[in-house]
Image (tube, rainbow, N blue to C red; front, side, top):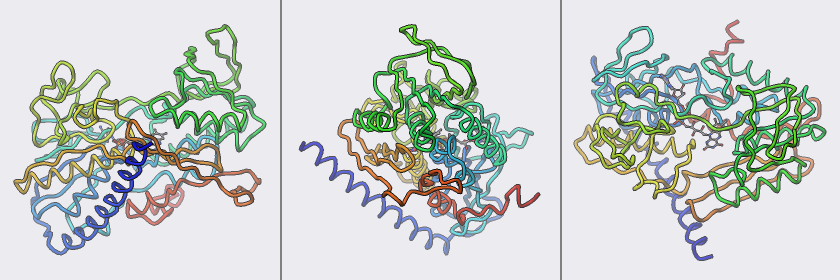
Length: 450
Ligand SMILES: Cc1cc2nc3c(=O)[nH]c(=O)nc-3n(C[C@H](O)[C@H](O)[C@H](O)COP(=O)(O)OP(=O)(O)OC[C@H]3O[C@@H](n4cnc5c(N)ncnc54)[C@H](O)[C@@H]3O)c2cc1C
């Protein structure tokens, strides 16, 4: 019990210091704007990957890089993807456009010349330059690899443009609408969110979750499983545990059946594969083969610098490149940071790692010592939806767990023109404003240009 209250106090402390750090950075950015001068040939900090890690890294650097330096962000997708909304978009129309955020051509908080966004696919890393598909070389003094995970859920989507993402989810929504029985393979947060959303929008459809482990969302603590299973029971979702039936490859399959260990068959109109993501370190494979672990993660030291020679056990004890960093899902953190427990691949942790790397680059430019990344109590926080009117905030330090429940009041549910519930958009507007965009206005909209 005492341990729990210590955790509550630590969460409050981390929350207050996160707000203070945010306000301090904002103020620092205002002062920095008055002092930064654009020069003819600035030195480059090159970041590959403009998602949670890469974007928050850029956002910190534009408020802190000294004159003579700039940041170049290389990203292959046309838009930032707010993936947290994707499970909801599988079964519920109306939110799709909110999850695809345009990158700002000009950032209102950035001084002139401090950053460049380069849309392109980085294909290799040379000693002092990143090479893009098409042959362009982008020279760097510092490089950050923030290439995340791939293929992401849903596996069949290669989301280069906004149009492709919208078309893809529109197709999934049609498949859900047409199916009477739906099987979700994988009882992680994505499977649970899709299942509870679909069943609360379409109570007459049968929804089954098939999970390979003994607990739902087994990468988290038992309280998250308990909340998930309670929601499944309430909504009449059938859950099978410790089952690994074979099923056709791809994100979806129609009109088939699965055979369980007992020999029982589960028929479905639609199967959706909600099993995990894979780390995408393919860009670094050729240049840093010794820095990549069996799961694809790039070994880093506590300062998030890429290790040249990790020990055979994958422990972060080797020498590091002082000017090459990895942040976000792609990084494999040392035990001194994780406390030996497996790290979850999550958006907040990725953003905070990006911000740590930005701080360390600026400190290195100024001749100061780097700061170690600490896995904070908010980094493993999750907002989990459990249907269209219910959600929980979950926090853990790997030992203690905190849960806060939210439920939309009766009569206050958000509904579409057909009177069906659609749920909220998980505060997507916040992400738009973090990217200095007006929610949900996309000037570059393909529909508008057509
Ligand atoms: C469906 C889903 C739901 C999720 N829900 C949550 C949630 O509720 N809460 C939470 O905290 N986390 C959630 N996550 C996890 C979270 O999205 C990831 O942890 C986070 O996106 C990691 O950020 P990242 O910047 O490290 O990598 P990514 O988001 O994977 O981004 C990597 C970026 O690098 C780009 N890139 C890769 N290779 C290249 C290249 N060679 N050249 C140019 N660009 C390249 C990619 O296009 C991409 O934009 C969810 C993930 C998924 C898939």
